[in-house]
Image (cartoon, rainbow, N blue to C red; front, side):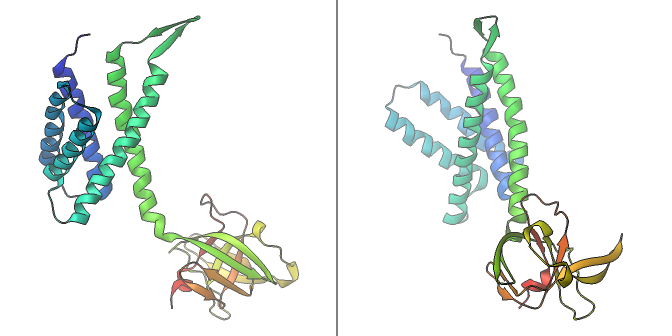
Length: 259
């Protein structure tokens, strides 16, 4: 079997570059492209040692040392926590991307011609792998950044109403500034399908927003428990037909999170 070292080096360099760039973007490291290029070059050049006959254990140690040096070249060393975090994310992205490429290779390597399966060209696999890797990591990083941005806005909520405890998934929306003009109580919005209530207990509260105004159906609960915040009593529940945030049952009011 022929092995084209130049092609192996280029492919390895491209994937090392993608991994280091992805790590830099996720961790918001202010790293120049030059350092990422240097780290990728080191990773690609050291692949030449793989042609030397060594044991599996020695190969594992070798790969660990290479990844450590790649991180040091690309991100420098500031402290142990900074270094370990860079190394951890480099490994995690490598594992995720490796699994994705393995799946793509298995699905795409063979094409069906009636009942005969024909192996496709390795060149097609390489090009497809690189293109799909970039697309996959773009959306993966985007979702990770969105999750990190919104993570602190999610709360486990327990709502107490008429002796019943209702568990809800809450989301803090800083745009929710609703309050009752009667007693100045803040209002949280809850999916009305989650609560069994009596229509006679409904309080109509006027609301005003930039685009709309009207009357909001509200009820007065017993209390609420918000994860890491504690119990609150002075508030109202605004009954909402639908909350558009996926997996969320109630929209919290930031006033409830104040001491």
